Length: 402
Image (cartoon, rainbow, N blue to C red; front, side):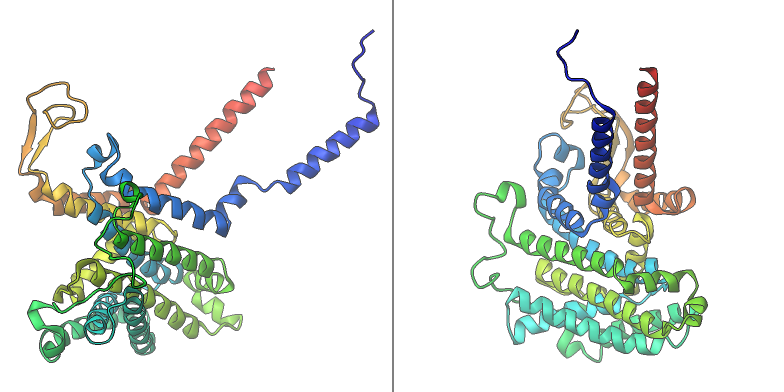
């Protein structure tokens, strides 16, 4: 006879109820993943380790061939693309004039830094305020029309801003030469943005990246809060069917205008950061190609997702800045500069490879649009779901075998 205590029916029932209660109390992975705290925390960690992985980590940085300034630039354009996606991906409005907000904020931030204050925080606030006000005015007019007329109106306003900066306002903007009088002071009057972060320079690099990364995390938190608020639900309802949304009593035009202003404000944050990043405002900030680039970034990464446009911005800038600089396409693991060398003499597949970067980017864009309409972020989500289902099936089979 065993001395082990036997489980009575009452004890088993109590144990089962405890397990059920525990399962109900423990949040599922899906709930944890979608919680605001997790989104902000994961974004903070990703932003913190990104420059190290991209430009300084052993092996990995050698594969990426990245550098610190490009990591900063990716975050700036990521904010721009994320804000644009709030308009296109969640409200269904395609704007070809967002260069007006990016460039307007960049010029406003530059002029403010030269004439009023060089504080980086005040410079960002000045540029963002200018962009939000511009978006309210242009949106008030453009949203009177829908579809292709809306897209053309925004494009026309963007080009008007370009020619205003080129000639009539050249005494302020610097015309073709751009605005060169940008003055950026120390962050909070203490931290010079050009200097490395003491004891953490190996991870974060300079104070400039800390500023850009902190603003990027804040923008993700704000966008996530908007998308999970009643405003975000209304934006999705308008995207699916704006007439039905109007029939249930929603003021669709007002919500569209608010989405346009929010998107313009995000573009303003990014444009202001770009002025701080480059200490210069080029005239091309207003050109229509800037509006086209942010459309490509958002679609490439995946419209309708929070992080997809940031990923799309990273891929676009990587091809533009890294792939374009590759003179020879060589067979992997051949040549002295590889992290793992099998053959000392490089095997060249194509000379002048970087000159084809526009073609490479176009092929990638076409491939993603045709094969993965939800963008690269959607593809990664599908792969993750498939792996989880595969793992779950394997666990069930093992459990059944017992």
